[in-house]
Image (cartoon, rainbow, N blue to C red; front, side, top):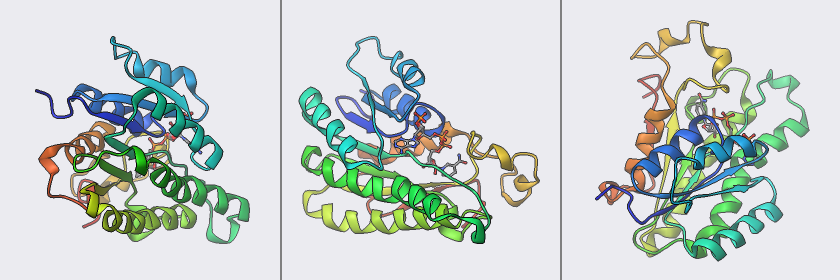
Length: 242
Ligand code: NDP
Protein backbone atom coordinates (compact mmCIF):
# COMPACT_ATOMS: atom_id res chain seq x y z
CA UNK A 1 0.00 0.00 0.00
CA UNK A 2 1.39 3.38 -1.00
CA UNK A 3 1.55 6.31 1.45
CA UNK A 4 -1.25 8.33 -0.17
CA UNK A 5 -3.49 5.64 -1.67
CA UNK A 6 -7.11 6.79 -2.27
CA UNK A 7 -6.26 10.42 -1.48
CA UNK A 8 -7.21 13.34 -3.71
CA UNK A 9 -4.59 16.10 -3.76
CA UNK A 10 -5.08 19.62 -5.09
CA UNK A 11 -1.79 21.38 -5.83
CA UNK A 12 -1.77 25.02 -6.96
CA UNK A 13 0.87 26.22 -9.44
CA UNK A 14 1.76 22.66 -10.43
CA UNK A 15 2.51 23.29 -14.11
CA UNK A 16 6.23 23.69 -13.39
CA UNK A 17 8.93 24.06 -10.76
CA UNK A 18 8.34 22.93 -7.19
CA UNK A 19 4.59 22.48 -7.70
CA UNK A 20 5.19 20.06 -10.57
CA UNK A 21 7.57 18.01 -8.41
CA UNK A 22 5.02 17.98 -5.59
CA UNK A 23 2.29 16.74 -7.97
CA UNK A 24 4.58 14.02 -9.32
CA UNK A 25 5.64 12.90 -5.84
CA UNK A 26 2.08 12.78 -4.49
CA UNK A 27 1.01 10.83 -7.56
CA UNK A 28 3.90 8.38 -7.14
CA UNK A 29 2.73 7.86 -3.55
CA UNK A 30 -0.73 6.87 -4.78
CA UNK A 31 -2.72 10.12 -4.78
CA UNK A 32 -5.01 11.32 -7.54
CA UNK A 33 -3.68 14.75 -8.44
CA UNK A 34 -5.54 17.93 -9.32
CA UNK A 35 -3.01 20.15 -11.04
CA UNK A 36 -3.68 23.85 -11.39
CA UNK A 37 -1.92 26.38 -13.61
CA UNK A 38 -2.39 30.04 -14.37
CA UNK A 39 -1.27 30.27 -18.00
CA UNK A 40 0.79 27.23 -18.98
CA UNK A 41 -1.95 24.71 -19.77
CA UNK A 42 0.35 22.69 -22.07
CA UNK A 43 2.88 22.18 -19.28
CA UNK A 44 0.11 21.21 -16.86
CA UNK A 45 -1.16 18.63 -19.41
CA UNK A 46 2.28 17.04 -19.40
CA UNK A 47 2.19 16.72 -15.61
CA UNK A 48 -1.01 14.67 -15.55
CA UNK A 49 0.15 12.58 -18.50
CA UNK A 50 1.82 10.40 -15.85
CA UNK A 51 -1.63 9.14 -14.82
CA UNK A 52 -2.83 6.49 -17.30
CA UNK A 53 -6.14 6.10 -15.43
CA UNK A 54 -7.01 9.72 -16.36
CA UNK A 55 -8.47 10.24 -12.87
CA UNK A 56 -6.11 13.16 -12.33
CA UNK A 57 -7.18 16.52 -13.74
CA UNK A 58 -5.89 19.94 -14.71
CA UNK A 59 -7.67 23.21 -14.04
CA UNK A 60 -6.96 26.85 -14.70
CA UNK A 61 -6.73 28.89 -11.52
CA UNK A 62 -5.75 32.41 -10.59
CA UNK A 63 -5.39 32.28 -6.81
CA UNK A 64 -5.70 36.05 -6.56
CA UNK A 65 -9.25 35.91 -7.94
CA UNK A 66 -12.14 34.73 -5.77
CA UNK A 67 -14.20 34.14 -8.93
CA UNK A 68 -11.52 31.82 -10.28
CA UNK A 69 -11.20 30.02 -6.92
CA UNK A 70 -14.96 29.48 -6.64
CA UNK A 71 -15.13 28.15 -10.21
CA UNK A 72 -12.33 25.67 -9.44
CA UNK A 73 -13.85 24.51 -6.15
CA UNK A 74 -17.21 23.92 -7.86
CA UNK A 75 -15.57 21.81 -10.57
CA UNK A 76 -13.54 19.83 -8.04
CA UNK A 77 -16.64 19.25 -5.92
CA UNK A 78 -18.60 17.95 -8.91
CA UNK A 79 -15.83 15.67 -10.15
CA UNK A 80 -14.13 14.44 -6.96
CA UNK A 81 -16.55 15.26 -4.16
CA UNK A 82 -13.72 15.71 -1.66
CA UNK A 83 -10.16 16.90 -1.12
CA UNK A 84 -7.74 15.06 1.16
CA UNK A 85 -4.61 17.13 0.53
CA UNK A 86 -4.47 20.83 -0.32
CA UNK A 87 -1.06 22.24 -1.25
CA UNK A 88 -0.86 26.02 -1.57
CA UNK A 89 2.24 26.21 -3.73
CA UNK A 90 1.51 28.91 -6.36
CA UNK A 91 3.61 31.96 -5.74
CA UNK A 92 5.37 34.85 -7.43
CA UNK A 93 8.32 37.07 -6.66
CA UNK A 94 9.01 40.52 -8.08
CA UNK A 95 12.43 41.46 -6.67
CA UNK A 96 13.15 45.15 -6.30
CA UNK A 97 14.79 47.54 -3.86
CA UNK A 98 12.49 48.57 -1.03
CA UNK A 99 12.05 52.12 -2.31
CA UNK A 100 11.31 50.92 -5.86
CA UNK A 101 8.52 48.48 -5.02
CA UNK A 102 5.35 49.84 -6.62
CA UNK A 103 1.94 49.65 -4.99
CA UNK A 104 0.80 47.41 -7.83
CA UNK A 105 3.68 44.97 -7.32
CA UNK A 106 3.05 44.93 -3.57
CA UNK A 107 -0.64 44.14 -4.14
CA UNK A 108 0.06 41.47 -6.76
CA UNK A 109 2.63 39.63 -4.62
CA UNK A 110 0.51 39.80 -1.47
CA UNK A 111 -2.70 38.77 -3.20
CA UNK A 112 -1.04 35.82 -4.95
CA UNK A 113 1.15 34.53 -2.12
CA UNK A 114 -1.01 35.30 0.92
CA UNK A 115 -4.58 36.30 0.17
CA UNK A 116 -4.77 33.51 -2.44
CA UNK A 117 -3.99 30.70 0.03
CA UNK A 118 -6.35 32.32 2.58
CA UNK A 119 -9.24 32.39 0.10
CA UNK A 120 -8.55 28.93 -1.28
CA UNK A 121 -8.33 27.36 2.18
CA UNK A 122 -11.58 29.03 3.22
CA UNK A 123 -13.41 27.89 0.09
CA UNK A 124 -11.99 24.32 0.27
CA UNK A 125 -12.82 23.74 3.94
CA UNK A 126 -16.23 22.15 3.18
CA UNK A 127 -14.55 19.66 0.82
CA UNK A 128 -11.80 18.62 3.22
CA UNK A 129 -12.45 15.36 5.02
CA UNK A 130 -12.43 15.38 8.80
CA UNK A 131 -9.68 13.44 10.62
CA UNK A 132 -7.59 12.42 7.62
CA UNK A 133 -7.03 15.50 5.50
CA UNK A 134 -4.16 17.92 5.52
CA UNK A 135 -3.21 21.38 4.23
CA UNK A 136 0.37 22.25 3.35
CA UNK A 137 1.42 25.83 2.60
CA UNK A 138 4.67 26.46 0.72
CA UNK A 139 6.33 29.41 2.39
CA UNK A 140 9.99 30.40 2.02
CA UNK A 141 13.12 31.01 4.05
CA UNK A 142 12.59 34.64 2.98
CA UNK A 143 9.55 34.68 5.26
CA UNK A 144 11.76 33.75 8.20
CA UNK A 145 14.67 36.14 7.91
CA UNK A 146 13.86 38.41 4.99
CA UNK A 147 15.67 38.42 1.70
CA UNK A 148 17.51 40.85 -0.52
CA UNK A 149 15.20 43.03 -2.60
CA UNK A 150 12.12 41.05 -1.68
CA UNK A 151 10.29 42.88 1.10
CA UNK A 152 6.82 42.23 -0.34
CA UNK A 153 7.66 38.57 -1.03
CA UNK A 154 9.12 38.11 2.47
CA UNK A 155 6.08 39.74 4.08
CA UNK A 156 3.75 37.47 2.11
CA UNK A 157 5.67 34.34 3.07
CA UNK A 158 5.93 35.38 6.71
CA UNK A 159 2.18 35.99 6.69
CA UNK A 160 1.68 32.53 5.25
CA UNK A 161 3.42 31.03 8.30
CA UNK A 162 1.06 32.94 10.59
CA UNK A 163 -1.91 31.89 8.45
CA UNK A 164 -0.75 28.28 8.80
CA UNK A 165 -0.73 28.47 12.60
CA UNK A 166 -4.11 30.20 12.81
CA UNK A 167 -5.73 27.79 10.37
CA UNK A 168 -4.26 24.85 12.28
CA UNK A 169 -5.96 26.16 15.42
CA UNK A 170 -9.25 26.59 13.55
CA UNK A 171 -9.09 23.13 11.95
CA UNK A 172 -8.01 21.24 15.06
CA UNK A 173 -11.57 20.42 16.13
CA UNK A 174 -11.99 18.59 12.81
CA UNK A 175 -8.60 16.90 13.20
CA UNK A 176 -7.43 18.47 9.95
CA UNK A 177 -3.68 19.08 10.07
CA UNK A 178 -2.20 22.30 8.68
CA UNK A 179 1.54 22.77 8.20
CA UNK A 180 3.99 24.86 6.23
CA UNK A 181 7.08 23.84 4.31
CA UNK A 182 9.73 26.51 4.05
CA UNK A 183 12.19 25.87 1.23
CA UNK A 184 15.56 27.59 1.05
CA UNK A 185 17.24 28.08 -2.32
CA UNK A 186 15.82 25.51 -4.68
CA UNK A 187 17.07 25.01 -8.23
CA UNK A 188 14.32 26.68 -10.26
CA UNK A 189 13.48 29.62 -12.47
CA UNK A 190 12.61 31.70 -9.40
CA UNK A 191 15.99 31.09 -7.74
CA UNK A 192 17.94 31.04 -11.02
CA UNK A 193 19.26 34.55 -10.51
CA UNK A 194 20.97 33.48 -7.28
CA UNK A 195 22.94 30.67 -8.92
CA UNK A 196 26.65 31.30 -9.27
CA UNK A 197 26.59 34.32 -6.93
CA UNK A 198 28.26 32.41 -4.12
CA UNK A 199 25.05 31.88 -2.15
CA UNK A 200 25.89 28.19 -1.83
CA UNK A 201 28.67 29.20 0.59
CA UNK A 202 26.04 30.30 3.12
CA UNK A 203 24.29 26.92 3.00
CA UNK A 204 25.59 24.25 5.42
CA UNK A 205 25.25 21.56 2.75
CA UNK A 206 26.97 23.85 0.18
CA UNK A 207 24.43 23.36 -2.59
CA UNK A 208 21.01 24.49 -3.72
CA UNK A 209 18.13 22.14 -3.02
CA UNK A 210 16.13 20.13 -5.51
CA UNK A 211 12.40 20.54 -5.96
CA UNK A 212 12.08 16.78 -5.34
CA UNK A 213 13.48 17.33 -1.84
CA UNK A 214 10.68 19.80 -1.10
CA UNK A 215 8.15 17.42 -2.67
CA UNK A 216 9.20 14.47 -0.49
CA UNK A 217 8.67 16.60 2.62
CA UNK A 218 5.20 17.58 1.41
CA UNK A 219 4.32 13.90 0.79
CA UNK A 220 5.47 13.01 4.31
CA UNK A 221 3.40 15.81 5.88
CA UNK A 222 0.35 14.79 3.84
CA UNK A 223 0.63 11.18 4.95
CA UNK A 224 -0.42 9.37 8.10
CA UNK A 225 3.27 9.15 8.99
CA UNK A 226 2.87 12.79 10.08
CA UNK A 227 -0.36 12.16 12.00
CA UNK A 228 0.83 14.07 15.10
CA UNK A 229 2.29 17.06 13.23
CA UNK A 230 0.21 20.21 12.90
CA UNK A 231 0.79 23.99 13.08
CA UNK A 232 4.48 23.45 12.25
CA UNK A 233 6.94 24.83 9.74
CA UNK A 234 9.34 22.29 8.29
CA UNK A 235 12.46 23.90 6.85
CA UNK A 236 13.93 22.33 3.71
CA UNK A 237 16.93 24.59 3.29
CA UNK A 238 20.16 22.59 3.64
CA UNK A 239 20.96 24.48 6.83
CA UNK A 240 20.73 27.97 5.31
CA UNK A 241 18.62 29.08 8.27
CA UNK A 242 17.97 27.38 11.62
P1 NDP B 1 7.61 28.87 -10.49
O1 NDP B 1 7.73 30.31 -10.85
O2 NDP B 1 8.51 27.89 -11.15
O3 NDP B 1 6.09 28.37 -10.73
C1 NDP B 1 5.03 29.15 -10.24
C2 NDP B 1 3.75 28.37 -10.40
O4 NDP B 1 2.68 29.16 -9.86
C3 NDP B 1 3.38 28.10 -11.85
O5 NDP B 1 2.72 26.86 -11.92
C4 NDP B 1 2.43 29.24 -12.20
O6 NDP B 1 1.50 28.88 -13.23
C5 NDP B 1 1.70 29.39 -10.88
N1 NDP B 1 1.14 30.72 -10.65
C6 NDP B 1 1.74 31.93 -10.76
N2 NDP B 1 0.86 32.90 -10.45
C7 NDP B 1 -0.30 32.29 -10.14
C8 NDP B 1 -1.58 32.76 -9.76
N3 NDP B 1 -1.88 34.07 -9.63
N4 NDP B 1 -2.56 31.84 -9.53
C9 NDP B 1 -2.32 30.53 -9.66
N5 NDP B 1 -1.13 30.02 -10.03
C10 NDP B 1 -0.14 30.91 -10.27
O7 NDP B 1 7.74 28.81 -8.90
P2 NDP B 1 8.67 27.88 -7.97
O8 NDP B 1 8.44 26.46 -8.32
O9 NDP B 1 10.04 28.40 -7.95
O10 NDP B 1 8.04 28.19 -6.52
C11 NDP B 1 6.92 27.49 -6.06
C12 NDP B 1 6.61 27.95 -4.64
O11 NDP B 1 7.75 27.73 -3.81
C13 NDP B 1 6.30 29.45 -4.55
O12 NDP B 1 5.29 29.67 -3.60
C14 NDP B 1 7.62 30.05 -4.09
O13 NDP B 1 7.43 31.25 -3.41
C15 NDP B 1 8.12 28.94 -3.17
N6 NDP B 1 9.56 28.97 -2.98
C16 NDP B 1 10.43 28.83 -4.04
C17 NDP B 1 11.80 28.83 -3.83
C18 NDP B 1 12.75 28.65 -4.94
O14 NDP B 1 13.98 28.67 -4.68
N7 NDP B 1 12.32 28.45 -6.16
C19 NDP B 1 12.36 29.01 -2.49
C20 NDP B 1 11.37 29.15 -1.46
C21 NDP B 1 10.03 29.12 -1.70
P3 NDP B 1 1.88 29.08 -14.80
O15 NDP B 1 2.95 28.08 -15.12
O16 NDP B 1 0.64 28.78 -15.52
O17 NDP B 1 2.35 30.48 -14.94
